[in-house]
Image (cartoon, rainbow, N blue to C red; front, side, top):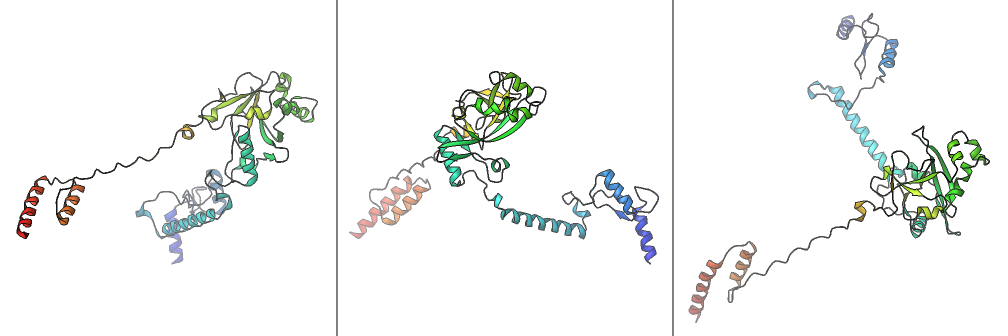
Length: 331
């Protein structure tokens, strides 16, 4: 009986689709390729780049589903539930809004930047840009030491050369901060001579500096023009900075490729400038005219009818006659 079952199984799968010389024994759960041995299984995974795992999100009609598919879907939902519960307990996912309570050092840094006319914004705690930001406020010196991302633009390459510098004093000019990169006698300038050759040849007087814009419309395609002989504090005044500034250095007197020039007095996003709508006041309902002399029961009926907008002019006359007859009978 076992030989009969094996023969029926092999006849159902057919021959191996890899070597085509042996009867197939296995079927791939993902791509359903029939194979006969481990060597053919490895060949099929390598050639088709298949991992051998069934795609549990692939559509399958209910008429074709078996007990195995139902159990697989059940296990898949259980994994999704465990994943969701795990993400709720992850400390890096606790903050999901920008309006959160900042730590004291970041709060002081934001207030100090606001006093200098710079709108400083922070990302959520799990963003890599927030994690690598080392900008801080020296409370004793009342000075901000910025982290700056220098991006040296090249004509023959779309990718700029990136340097991240920490502890940049806001009282120094951009010329002083870039001196270590543009002077060949400096250690950093000598090491990067091959990469920054055109910038060092042009000199600070022929270079143009551009700050990547934030908080304006189409901020990903716009930039500010910076003055090389002004301090970093003066250049950042009146601008929005997300974590730390990104400055492009080009030896052409035009914005980098893909950027447009904007002024410092550019309006911010319409969502931030538009006034919030105030709730409209509900009009007071007009008081309904009350009859001159009515019984308490009739008065309640009239008020109820007035709330539903019922015309009771015809009924009021008959009720008035009934009222007068009752008074005469009492007398």
